[in-house]
Structure formats: C-alpha cells, structure tokens
Image (cartoon, rainbow, N blue to C red; front, side, top):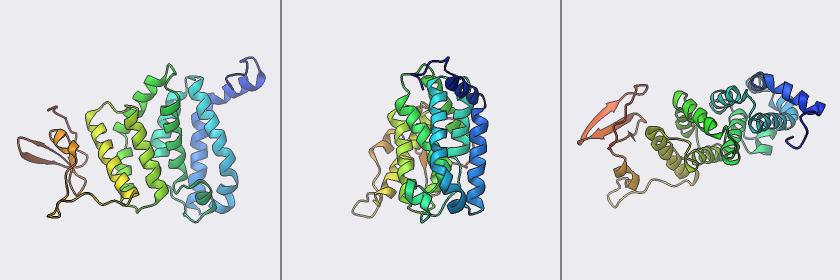
Length: 251
C-alpha cells in the first residue's frame, strides 16, 4: 500500500475506512464472540474467518505504518478487548486445527502486538506504541489472565502463544516498570516449564531450588503458592492481598 500514490482512488478510500477502524474491529470481535457463544463455529465462523482475519491484519498494518491518528484507539482496543478475551473454541474444530489455536480472538490480538513490536521499531510512533502497550498492561488484567491460563490445562497452542508474547515483551524492553518486568519473567519461566512439561528443579531433600534471579530480586516482588504478591525486607515477610496497590522500594 505504501507504494501506491496517495492520489489513487483506492488508497483514498482505504484512508477513509481508517477513520472508523476501531468500530470495524469492535464489530468483528462481537460477531466472533456471538458465533462462539452460540456454537456456530463450523457453520458461520470457519468459512469467513480466514479472509476476514487477513483484512483486519491489513487494516492494522496500514493504520500503524501510515501512523494514522487512530492508531492509539486501535492499539488500546486490541490489548484490552482482544488479548484479554477468554472465548474458547473446541480443539477438534476445523478452525482450531487449521490455525493451531484455541482462543481465536486472543490469538489474533497477540499476533498483531508481537508483529508491531518486532517489525515497526523504525517508525516515529514506535516509542509511543511501547508506552501504550506497557500502560495498558499495567492498568489492565493481561498478566492476571495469563496466570489463569496456567490453571486451564496444558493446551500447547495457548502455552506457545503466551511464551511468544511474554518473550517479545522482555526481549524488546517494552516493560520499564520493575514490578511488571519481574512478573513477566516469572510468568515466562512458568509457562516454559509447563510447555516443556518440566517440573521445577529440586534439591536432594525435595525442596524447590531457587533461580538465580530470586536473590537478586528478594527486595522487589515474589509470588507465593497462592499467587498472592508479597515482598521481603530485612527478613520480614508481609503478605499483600490481590488488588492492593504495591509501591516498590529499590534495593
């Protein structure tokens, strides 16, 4: 599309469409959720999903590469309404088998954000995109949702998507907040162990061996066996209930 002159009618029309790009995504997501809830995957969703996903991908790429003024709203929608979506389809459905996914809306959102992070670093808006991603992760429930995904079994496609997403965030320094970064690291390690079906390492007495990062971060944030958050300072452990605001004190 970038090679096409801005004066060509088709490009002008495409630019007009971008003015309502968030509404287009919102409508498509609602339709997908309706088909999944009503068990109309084979008859309604599967026949149209492939082409419509390609169109959404094209709209997303064009919105970002053209640095269209609507990219902020679209990016927030993808993070908050697609990645956090919990709609699940049967792993035996044609759609799941063809695309290797269990959560089509979530899967599509993750793919878009990963590609944005990896392929658009040369754009002037990339820094702002990074900020939008981190802010919405911080204010939203993405990591909490990822924790819940661990409790839903060992579906390989879901684990693989989570690993790719968390790894992309860390490899590209998207997270500047120490708490978020450490939480992302812990989640990634846990997902990898689950994906590789590898139990946590234990010593000769059967105790779980701590990772090297544990001592480095002992004054920051930890997780206990109930996924509650706590921090340690001067050998004193204080439990912080989920939902409590946490102020990190650097070591």
